[in-house]
Image: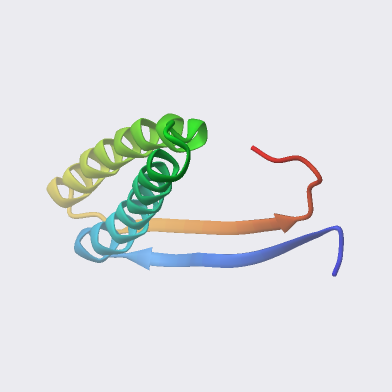
Length: 95
């Protein structure tokens, strides 16, 4: 493997309905991931997962921003261009 792998996740033009479905599913799944991680930490260690408790509100704020963008694109009868690349590399540190 190279030092960093770049994998294209999303690259296209979408209707507001398609963009909403795609992005909401992605962000809701990520929120659910962190909620489960935090719940597991509570059950196993009796404390919150710091990363999860930080990321959940950030992701929920992103969902609100996405909703505003979708509403505006719908009102203006516009398509939405979405591009997303996942960068993967190794790290010796834990968060």
